Image (cartoon, rainbow, N blue to C red; front, side, top):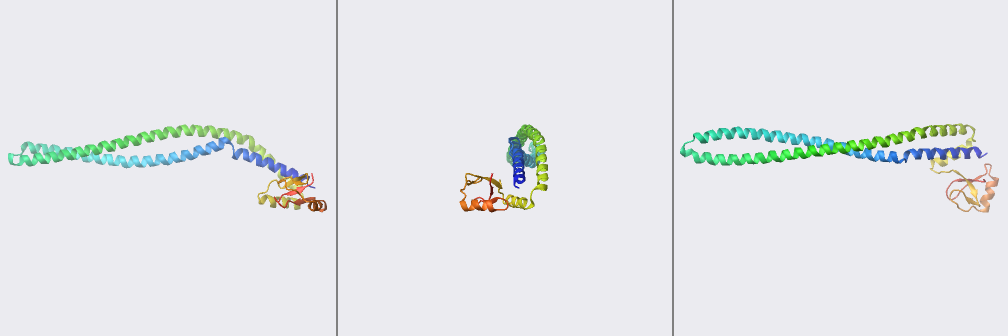
Length: 232
């Protein structure tokens, strides 16, 4: 009576093995890790682009100020050239102050330019790393897809066998089995081995062994692990 449910359990064991081969494959795990890094780098690229945009705006503004400064400086130089003796000292002081402003602007432009250059270098380096990681990701995915193409048919075949077995298994036994599976117990049915539970190896008392013989299905529930024990 139990042979079909034991066969069903064996097929489910195969199914679990196949599914674990896919979910725990090294290629899949490596691809998943790389994908997380690529997402992080994508976010970094977006951040760099935003930073570059703001820095470029600062550079353009500083450059505009400097061009305005040069124009005013040229006008001031003409005024100094044409200034009379009384106003000459005033223009000279103004000219020195203006030159100081110019130096400050040049320093600002140089600083912003260096920042732009640094951002561009970081962006190019991140792009380079992303390309290298993308190549590795593609290789791992190719390996995983090959493995999947080999295992998927086995999974489908196993599921079909289980579906066919469900049609001939005693409904009461199948219900008992699925209730245990819902509680994440596997294997559900284990043999009696030297008067011990074939799952957790707990000793089974003589009275419980007697219940096994008198039980309609020939099984007892292990008081320790909850599995069903049958006489092999």
